[in-house]
Amino acid sequence: MKRSLCRFAFVVMLNAPCLSQAAKPEPAYYVVLNSLTKNCTVADKMPRTDSPNITVASDTIYRSRAEAESAVKTLASCKQ
Image 1 (cartoon, one colour):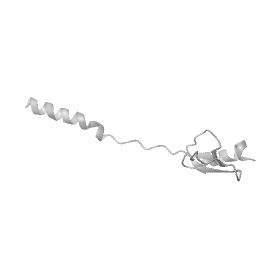
Image 2 (spheres, one colour):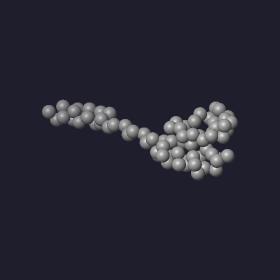
Image 3 (cartoon, helix red, strand yellow):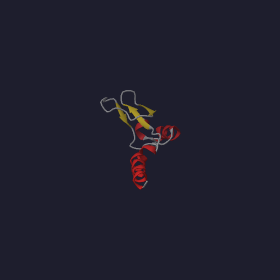
Image 4 (cartoon, one colour):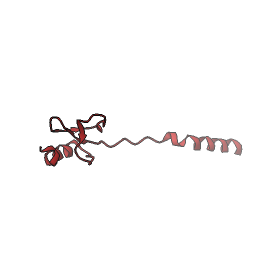
């Protein structure tokens, strides 16, 4: 009886990490500057760095789209 109880406890310990749920990632918004058109837009993904015309206008990561859109109006690089 003790042996089967110990085996059961061991199996439960091995499977315990599988029972937890992964945390949802928090939303992230970025202000992206297009160097050709001098327009800033809000993106929900980090822009790819292989394009020389598209850059991140600010190092800040915004938690809501409204915050990022208000930052577009205040950033100096977006006012050109």
